[in-house]
Length: 314
Image (tube, rainbow, N blue to C red; front, side, top):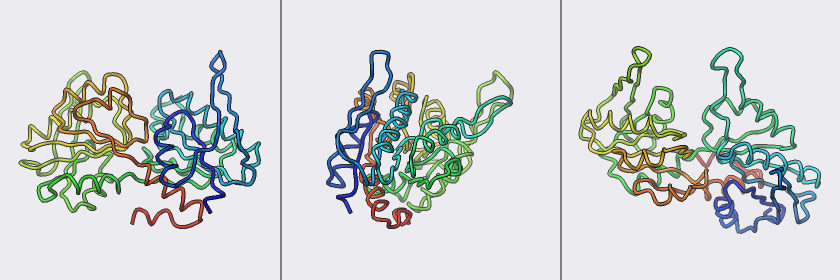
């Protein structure tokens, strides 16, 4: 089956694409993705893909719009080159936080991006830990939402004493994700409930659950500014937690987030390489990156051979 698979990488996360290719023992297809002087994207597929099962590996991370345009143009180039099936493998799906109308006259940008990817010619989509699961329904093509949790569970079991561990959701909205992890490692669950009583007043952090003397693991899908994570860590330590770790799927880490995390009381932040780590992330004292290359490689192999992907997470 491997002789019918082609892997094409955009510029968003070349190291992850190479890790996936290494797992599948396949070379990355020859593909040129470059810019004209005015920053227009130009793509040229430099080998035959007619009748092939092609997987485009491209996160729509910063700069989001550039990487999204690369994905759309690569997809169009493959469609016009008579690829048999095109799968957009999007480890980090940008615009996922715009999954509903938060107020009048606002867009649902996640749906717009889903339409763009479909119209460009993708036959299916594979992504990792969508911010909102219902985004799968925004696509009118098959969409696999994979989970980084098996990689995280293996890392936690290898490094931590699970007899004294509590899994914590940093907000009420992430309880389902935290409960799933707690169940996998047979740990208790706690929730940080943050509320602002009046506009302009600081947030009050209430911890629901027993954390005193425990090692706490905060779990979430995205860390962006890092503010919520650092505040949650402070609240847990004030309630007597022994130490606080965080396991997050996507390290967006914009602005001064890395400096904020480094200066915080978090013992360690563990993120995946769904977004290519910056140099600041790589040298940070308390940020560690685990790879999802094996997970995505296995899912791609199973998709190509038409076998079950969901059994990866049983």
